[in-house]
Image (cartoon, rainbow, N blue to C red; front, side, top):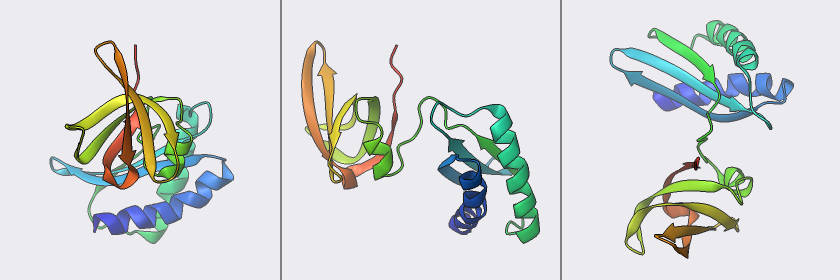
Length: 156
């Protein structure tokens, strides 16, 4: 059910976003407590503002009401992915070269399942990161298919 709602929402929201030159980052349909939430994360170069989120929410809500794919009550939330934006696909990795990222792996590489550091390169299959251990810089090569989750990591 959840994947059906996500794929249908993607079909409905994509033309809206294309018209407004916005990017779909992620969609999730989750139950939290007794409430269901349909969350749509959108972005654009330079960031998104609340007015744009509101416009997309209104237009998407109309489309969802027309097709009525969700039987239970739910809350629709359209928002920015935030500064620690998830990296969901290969294009996200390509556009994040030079940025600080955090990755969580399915299985350890060099004894660790988590790395945070600068994304040095991505060739479509291997993510190369530079990270620090105390004061020493190290490099790790991570096969793309071993990454469970990844996101931009803000450093202070």
